[in-house]
Image (cartoon, rainbow, N blue to C red):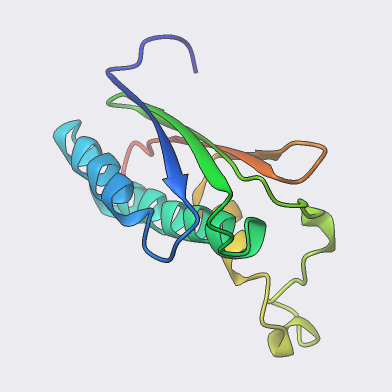
Length: 142
C-alpha cells in the first residue's frame, strides 16, 4: 500500500469488554475525515468491531493482565490495521464456515466470515494471535 499514509495511530488496549470502543470511534472519525463512506466505511466498521472484540474476548479471554496491541494507518484510498493479542492464537482455516448447513449451528466463524468479506486482504501470523487487515476503497462504494 505504500508509505503515503495521511493518519496513523498506535494503541494498547486493556482486555476488558468495551475497551476497544474509544479507539474504534477515533478510527471511524478519521475515516470520515478522509472521505470514506458507504460500503467501504461500513465494511471497515464491521471488521474493526469483530477483530478488536475477538482479540479481547477470545484471544486474551478478558484476562486483565493481557493487552491488545494495535497499529492503524489510513489514507483517502487505503486502510491498514494490525491487531495482536497475547492469547494462545487460533488456526483460521479451522474456524467453522457459518455459511454451510453444518456451520449454521456453530457459535463461531461469523466474525471471520465478515472480516474476509469486507477486507481486501487478511493475513494471520503463524501463532494465530495477530491479524493484519487491509481495505482499498472501491471506486463506487456508495
